[in-house]
Amino acid sequence: MLEISNVKKTFNKGTINEKQALVGINLTLKSEDFVTIIGGNGAGKSTMLNMIAGVYPIDEGKIILNGEDISRKPEHARAKYLGRVFQDPMKGTAAGMEIQENLALAYRRGRKRGLKWAITKKEQELYREQLKTLDLGLEDRMTSKVGLLSGGQRQALTLLMASLQQPELLLLDEHTAALDPKTAAKVLALTEKIISEHHLTAMMVTHNMKDAIRLGNRLIMMHEGKIIYDVSGEEKKKLQVSDLLAKFEQVSGGEFANDRMMLA
Image (cartoon, rainbow, N blue to C red; front, side, top):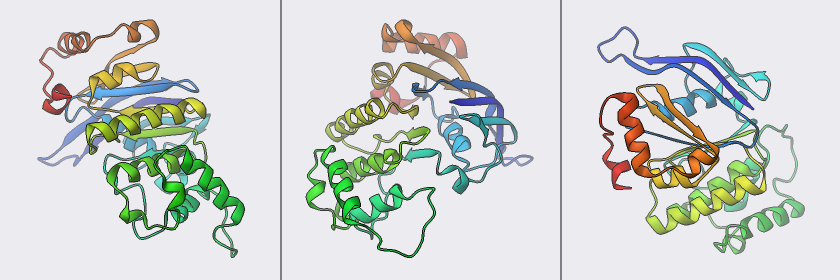
């Protein structure tokens, strides 16, 4: 489903602020893989997701998605293949538009648009049924402006929008980090349900080691722009947080330094 070959990225090249963000990343995902990604600050986790999404151009290497080379495609051209949920709940929705209007935008992603009624009755029924799955009562508030929703409600809506067209790849970049623990747990449960029911291929960056171990079928650890640990199957199921810390120290030669992740 996804093949990343020798992808490199350096920011501010040739300046005093030069930062080598990705150092020859190689990664292959099978269809329906759900990969959790952990690592310290500046490890390259979000940069890797941004490279896949086309936010920044890669310096070298190739990114193949479902057999198609998207390495040089602009961000908007990749949107029809990808679903994304960001760390900031405000980023994935249009605050000044209604809930149903936001869903309509997501439903039309990658499709041709013409002059016709924006939302049909058939679509309204579809959106109502989809919103019911969130169990947040939003199906009774479809004409409400999204800006009136809480952060957790907006993030749940963004997750629904990202998966509405069943993307070839779902990218989740610390999408529960800005939420309180109770809301984060609900959004994570919803994430797991949507990925499972729609048989999606997904990559999830998280700062919570327990979530990284519990969720998905594969775990990747990054450090200084490289993948230093890749585990799946029974080995992943048996992992403890202490095992991950020990593995990090063994491979990187230093202690794991990320306060947010350690506290989580």
